[in-house]
Length: 193
Image 1 (cartoon, one colour):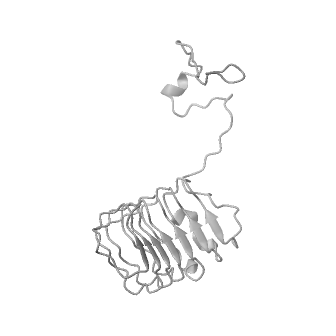
Image 2 (tube, one colour; image 1 turned 90 degrees about the vertical axis):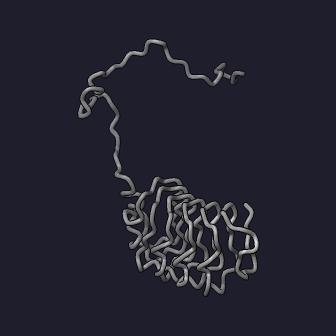
Image 3 (cartoon, helix red, strand yellow; image 1 turned 120 degrees about the horizontal axis):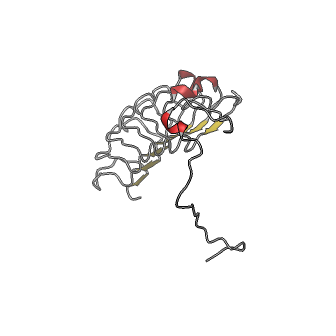
């Protein structure tokens, strides 16, 4: 099948391609004067450079973030929603000044294995830790404003650590290793994905 210009969607390269700069293979410091300039940004650095510090919503989905510290989140004193879905964040650590303002934290699909570093986020109403490597629900006791909590597709076997979360109304635990019948008295618990 071909498009209107006759192209069938396949890229064809000659069998005997010619390498125009073989010296680059032997010398990693070699630079080609004809090459276009490339702006190099260190991992996680400058991702939020130039962003107004009064912003209330940051969305860094699939941005290859590996360190929260490198984002320098302490600059954002009015932040209410922080979405860091589909990154490579292994651990959580947030500046204290986010505590009074941050309400929605989305860390869906990262590399988090332990729930730590959230104590100061006492005004969170929604927390999404789905698609991580979490085995135990712990260290949430200070998040008393939580109404929505998501742990879909983790390695959780037992529902625990939710005592004191009296405002919790939506707890999603689909695709974990929990046996039916072992759940707290929340109004809605979703165990199926």
